[in-house]
Length: 92
Image (tube, rainbow, N blue to C red; front, top):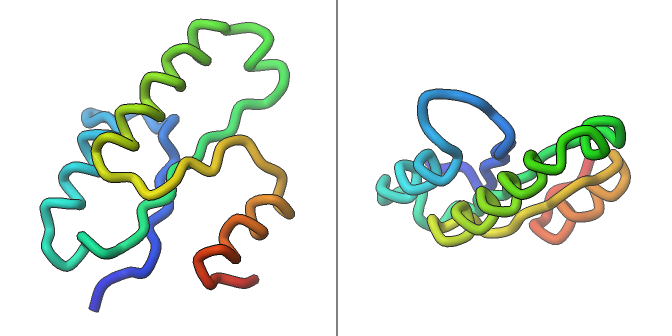
C-alpha cells in the first residue's frame, strides 16, 4: 500500500533539504507514482522583512520540481488549499 499524495512543507529546516527528501522518497519504488505536493506559508510580515527568504524559497521550489515534486501549491488560504487538493481527488 502506498500513499496517493504526500504533502511536504518546503520551509522545514532539518538536516536534509526538501529536494533531498523528495529524491529519497522517489527512490522507493512504491512511491514513484505518489503525488508529492509541496507548499509553504509566509505571513505578510515575514515576506516584507526578509527578501532573501523569498529568493531562497524560489530556488528551493525549482530544486523540488527537478527532484520529482508533482506541484508547488504556493501561498494559500484554507479554501484555496482545499480547491487545489480537489484536483487530486481529495475533498474535506
